[in-house]
Length: 226
Ligand code: SAH
Image 1 (cartoon, rainbow, N blue to C red):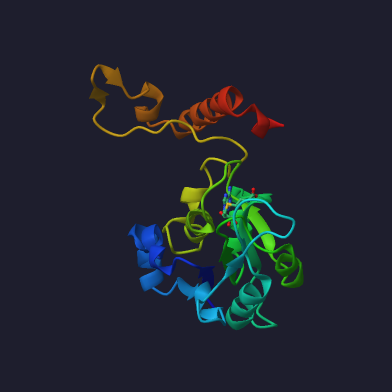
Image 2: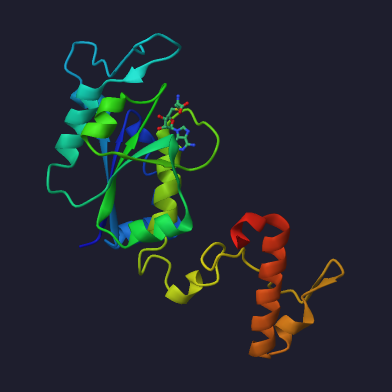
């Protein structure tokens, strides 16, 4: 069984977007993962296909109605669907590399993209939606956030990127930021590749990279070292 992602959105035309490009697109074509999209508006019941209403208690904006969203979720993910149900939300648990890895090992995800002021709290509770945030800023909708999440997850699915060892050294995988990378030419605008990297001494290369990773992490992201 390959990883199966299902998005619920008011803007289905935005997909697959970047998820269809490069290695992720190839992985999809090769059947390593799949992407289905559902238009939330298809579950509206009135003539105007209304999906939102004004916030109870007053205030700006509109809120996605619980009955419409629940119908969409139930159609996409009936009881017994093993996939986690996620709601992209700035109030959510921050997306991390560890979370991406956990999701990549699972059966997939059902992902709800919010719009306007968000979604009615009751549907979050009644359908067990896990709120996930991609960072401490507010987007206009959950679509780009869902793409960020899926891009981080899908590249970790075995076979999508090729060599599995290519993940081990990456930023966040070992609690550190990645060391600097270089490639030819050996000398460029008067700057040389650090000699240790062309020395052929793998032990020394390893040590240098570790030291660079630690120094970079200490300087830029001391919070990761705690
Ligand atoms: N009023 C809400 C923000 C709504 S933004 C609040 O203050 O919390 C509209 C939609 O964009 C949200 O429902 C969510 O789906 C998405 N979104 C915005 N910022 C996001 C973030 N940092 N991470 C994930 N999704 C986000």
